[in-house]
Length: 330
Image: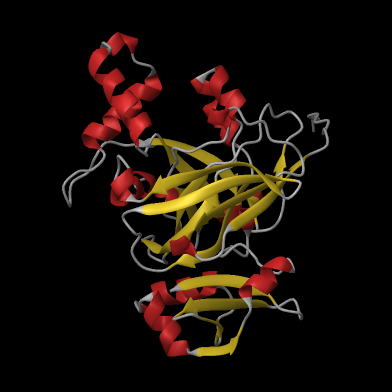
């Protein structure tokens, strides 16, 4: 089952479920957030709760997308209580990339490896622990709160000072925190973990700066288990034509960490277990147009799709105007 959110003509949020080839309104659901919190509080599974509420009128979700009526598939009434975070160096990449990494790891001495390669090797050796065990922690980064989340179809805004505006096609986990501080997974969705790769390459200590950018996710959330082998496509459109296109892989078959291990190392921090909060946690990628020498421009459209997740995630690129910032003493 896939769920999403739209705004109807009366500017009211409607929650939509896609199942068995039909896309229909979920009766009595005020938002995906309220639906998820109700499931957490009642102990009823999300799919079972949706079945209990029942489905109403049929919706043409693709038409709503084209009209700009899709929302992010989950939000929070207070954007400061939605957290955008992610992990890196978690994916094995293509066979060629994987082979070259393994060769480098086996032939270079410890002192010859970059910190990124050391982190990648740690994941290979300890990112998939036995069930019930804790594995090595991944690279982790913060992207911002709900003010940085961009709805499907809306523009990703690159700061005027950015050196690069590049896509990162990823799968993200969607979570709410229950009243007792327990994390609950709503499901999984496509995401564009938009980053500044030029700034990141200057020095790995600039990673934190490079990640403080918009992110988009959706349009639909997949309820249930994440498929182990996800195969999708990431492309950039310029003037309506494909400038760049490449397949991407995700799912645990193509990762050096389990989802459970990534979740553990995020939610082990009490700051991320605050009742009522929403988390969008991106699991990483091994496919970037930047790696192929692509330089994006304002007006380009990012498109990320994978069959398991319903509609593709599309966002045009805009460049923000320079902003003069000064600090005033009180």
